[in-house]
Image 1 (cartoon, rainbow, N blue to C red):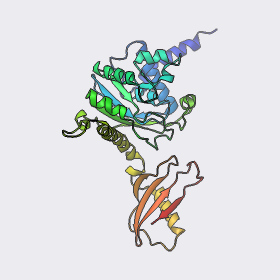
Image 2 (image 1 turned 90 degrees about the vertical axis):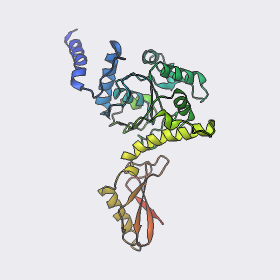
Image 3 (image 1 turned 30 degrees about the horizontal axis):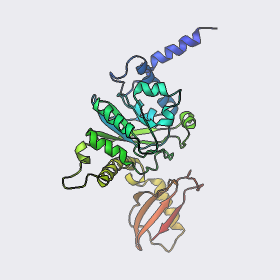
Length: 315
């Protein structure tokens, strides 16, 4: 057997750090084999998922919580590729206990979590990790929504409990453009064009309970909503709720109005209201006309029950 293929592969691996020139190279937390794994993961995310990511605004040292929407099973890889800090994710125990994954999970300090929502041991482990100065990433939704970032579910109060007790900065992130699947192998091997963006760190004081207010479940729900709003705000920069209408949307509006000649011409540009909810990927818009304010619902071309973009109006 010729040694040249093996030597070529080794040279390729050694050249990865120079060829990739990552915006956020691994920090002191990655040494030896861990550093190799970091570059291997970054190469995978770049080549297979064409990852576009901002440098994660994590502290150079010390504790922090990283929160993000959960789109598919490769979200962990994408977040780690944009961070030079070691991310010890809280992951479902059924994945943690897979024999092929467990050594890597233990190597980077992942925390196994039971899905029943009553895993106090995992909560204590997360608080202990933060006390040790580590970064703990959490997906507040507690489950995958395989809509490539179009939908963001309700947050679980567990992340707010950890954040309010640890009193460390919370950094929100938003993931989009990932494979629309809930299966690990399909998401791992399906090419995509993923993007990760980050928001400003949330100070622990923003999650504190004001004096004279109940520190129970209602306070946790309010803190949870504050955290989820930070993720939704990042989504809305790129989703319909955060952009001006493009030529395609204006063309859709004209097409719809042509079907209703009795309607007056619009007196304003369409204004984005956000996503319609569910899994359709539809967006809601409104515009002013001589007959008052009208609404427009638009479906994407590749929507689940639509073969072409369509609109509907409602007074």
